[in-house]
Each structure stands twice: as structure tokens, then as C-alpha cells.
Amino acid sequence: MSVIFRIKICVLIALGSYTTRAQDALYGGDFTSASMMNPAFISYNTCKRFTLFNRVQWAGISNGYNTTIAVAEFKAKRGNKGYGFGIVNDLAGSGNYRTSIAYGAYAKSVKTGIHSELLFGLQAGFGQISVNWSKLTFGDMIDARRGVVYATNQTFGEVQTFMNFNSGVAFISKQFFLGVACMNLSKPIQSLIPGSIESHLPRHYNFHGGVVVHGYVSGNRLEFLPQVSLDIQGASHVLTAGSTVSYKQAAMGMWIRINRSAALSMSLIKGNVRFGVTAEVPTNKLLVRSMGTYECFIKKSISCNNSKKHKMLECPLFD
Image (tube, rainbow, N blue to C red; front, side, top):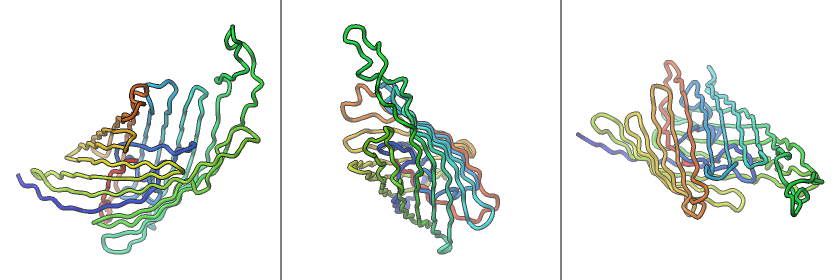
């Protein structure tokens, strides 16, 4: 049995997810969908790709966050262009605080060498935020002896609609890739109560770096992919470090968000379909009540016939 290791460096500067709240969600697990990280990767290295993703945050707490994302990507027949469409639905709280977004994306690649490309991407979305006010209890509804018996005089908010934009650029080669994306370019308003102080969703910056160490064991490719990332959005700074091991048709990842949580992810590939799950548990006092966060995804990719493009170096991103 021979093992030959080669080291390649990969660094990605990208932006997190498209979920719109007071702060964007940070997803765990594998490189679920490149376009969720950077619109420049729309349809890259494939002709068609379909991804369905679900996240249940704080499973032990009633009415926690539940996020569902569906993404479809298509490569244009000519011009090295790609298109993508996605739907995001985020539900939280007993009042059903709901964020829904539909978006479209466009990407183009330009050859800069035999084994290198420059990618550009733009993503535009329309969304709305709403609350089911009938499920909420206000102070003026409560009687000291009889409980909740009165109607409220509280002013209910309105459905908030908004536009949001992402853009990204990436450089791909056989040895490494570099990318940068900016999210929430329009800093959409999140306020629901008329006349209240406007609350804007801050821009989200995410910095990624990693090393690919791979070789061959009994003729099968073995990969170790250590990663580190830093998410910055407003006053929030989150440092994440971890690694994925891939062998044959399976992959396993372990990572930790410093002073926040630790996670284990697993995925299997059958033909052109990939299925994965992630379990994340807090490393602070939230562990007892929250019972952790769980994610699952299924992705189907269809390769281009007679494609001469080189295979992308896919570093799993812990976002």
C-alpha cells in the first residue's frame, strides 16, 4: 500500500448565507452549495445542480429557528455563463416570525490560462418579513387573576418587503482559488412597526482559508481538508476551525466555533447524488436547553457532456 501526499493551498474570501434576519445564519457542515457562499460559483463545474437544505436550530427549544433553502443552477450552452434561482424560507418563534426570499443569480467565467479562470457573480433577491400577530401575547391582555382574557390595544406591524443584493468574484486554478463576495449590499430594513426606529441588516463579510492534503490509498483518493474561517457582521465576530476527511464515496468533517459550538458532519455520494447531515452542539450553557442544531441536505449534479473544463478544487466551507 502506497500513500503519496501532495499539498495544495486554497483560500476563499466569501460571504455567508442569504437568510435575512437581524444577523445572517451561520451554516455548518460541508460545501453544501457553492452558490450559497459566493454567487461567482453559480453552476461552476457542472451543467445542472439542484440542492435542498434544511436547518433546525436549537431543537430542544420550542419554536426555534427552522430554515429551508432550495437552489437550482444551470450552465448556459454558450459563453461560459451560469444562472441560478433560489428560495429561502426562515421561520422562528411562537409568533411565526417569517422571512421569505426568492432570488436569481448570474455568473460568468473568463479563461486566464490553461488551468485557471476568473469568475464573476451577481445575486439579486426580493424578500418579505412578517409576523403572525394573533399568536403573540401582550401585557395589556393579561388579568392578574384570570390570565389572558383581554383584547390588546397594541399596534400591529406591517409586512416588510425589501430588495437585497450580493456580488462576488473568484480566481480558480489547479493549485488554489481566491474569492471575495459582499452580502447585504443594500442593507435592507428589518423594522416591522410603522414609525419605529429603522433597523437595517448589516453587511456580512466572511474570510476562509484552508489546506488540501491528498494522496492515494490502495488506488483510492484520500483527502484531508483543514479549514479556518472568520465571519464578521456588525459587532459579531465568529472564528471557525475544522477539517474534513474524504475517502471513496464518503466524507466526515469535524469543526469548532471558538467559544460557541462544535460539530460533526457526514455525507455519502451515490452516483450523481450526495446526501449529508450535520449535528452541532453549543460548548456554552446553551447545551442543556437547546439540544443542539441539526442540518441535512441532498444535492444532485449533472455534468456537461464532452466538457473540457478542469475539475474545480472543492474545499468544504464551514459556514
